[in-house]
Image (cartoon, rainbow over the protein chains, first blue to last red):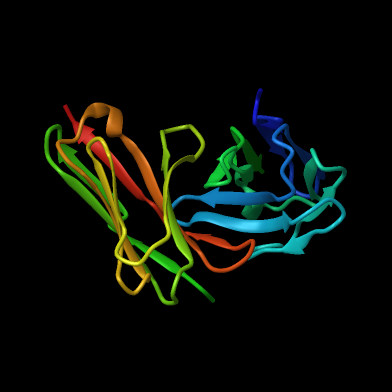
Length: 112
Length: 110
């Protein structure tokens, strides 16, 4: 089993372009999370979904939207990308033993 | 806002030396988790501590949770080159809320 799968792995966007980052988990967990990672800033929560059909803002939600399509999938959308959104994006879900999070391999996004 | 501060930001050691990273929270935590991220990789869960004063060991790694449940530390004895990476603490602050520290990047001179 893959655990948490993110696509794409790399992306370069021009300012103002839009894109959707995809995340899927095969662990049948209710909760899913989107984080961004910037140098010296650790991991900051963008949005999370406690269960199918619900989403909530995290620490840094501005400029992003999310969709919990079903229990498996949680997507993150940038409607109009800005250089400040250059970052590494990680999707996560509680681990198989319900301790800790399992992270996807990340999407490295550059906005020029 | 609620924060988890982690120090140092960087640490360079000679192989065989010990390494310690510290986390401090402004509020009482329900639990503390530790993650390791290899260069270019994703965070990987190491351990969770829940009880006040708890100490857990994983081979050369020792994890501690403070009595007041506001601070934690990770100590690596006799570092090896495989220990290279960034170590993150993450404090549990209630349902659905895990706040990550800034991380400590460990580099090792073989």
